[in-house]
Image (cartoon, rainbow, N blue to C red; front, side):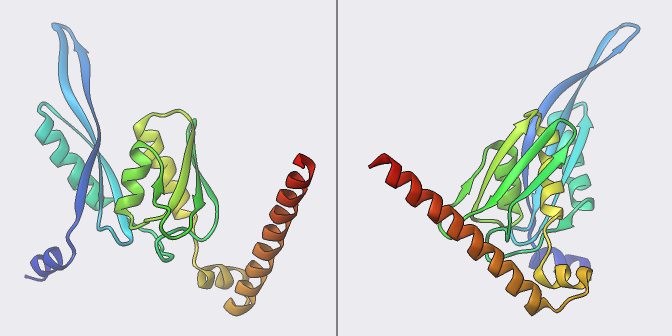
Length: 192
């Protein structure tokens, strides 16, 4: 009963990222089956991925979806974007993620776009470097999103007051912003 209520109050969306026909070589020739990569999320802060393999496509998708629901992780929500730049890595793939202003939207391709949408992130800029293999891209994106921390988690790990940590972060952002403004002014002056 409690499980049914939870399912109604917390609807999960699932999206198929990639379907591949794979072959197993046996004595009589090749046996073909299908592999499916699926991402599942609630559109708020929980997201997961799964890989399923079966003789038919719908069965592979169902298996992948079930595995994705078991592997869900919680991504901290920061008003629709991420709080700072982060790089997720998996194998030969790295995904650079940058925070974006409200209203910018999701500037990302393929698997990263789907995963960030289902994680509840509405404004982000991403770039995939290295391999573009869908499985590696999904794993690298999850790796990057798991590196994110709230200011409270960061302060607790350092043993400082959250207000002090926020103040230091704001000072750093101000210095970084003033450097970029100076560089822009210098570039404009050199053009004229």
